[in-house]
Image 1 (cartoon, rainbow, N blue to C red):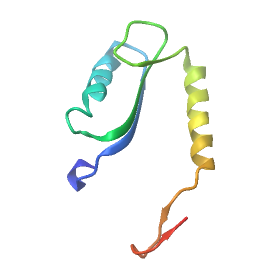
Image 2 (cartoon, rainbow, N blue to C red):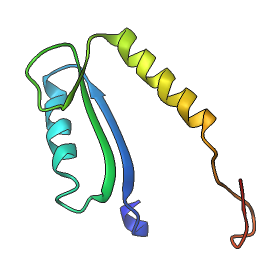
Image 3 (spheres, rainbow, N blue to C red):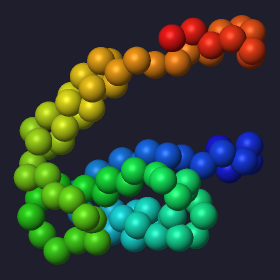
Image 4 (cartoon, one colour):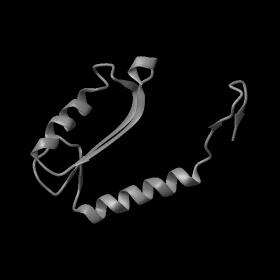
Length: 92
């Protein structure tokens, strides 16, 4: 994306151990470093209640699955824009 001059506007990262803390730290500072769009929605989630650099907590893997299912359902119910072969037209 960066090579094309694009920035992500949505980031979801989920982890459950110490090795994920570096990811949470990088993601939390990505907007200020112009890696992400200024209006990006960033969700860093750790699995299990413990000290973490993640802003959000999920209790266990079943909560991760429920969250992902909810996101999928929401994205399926939202109107989406699909690219057609002709870049001057968009199909909704």
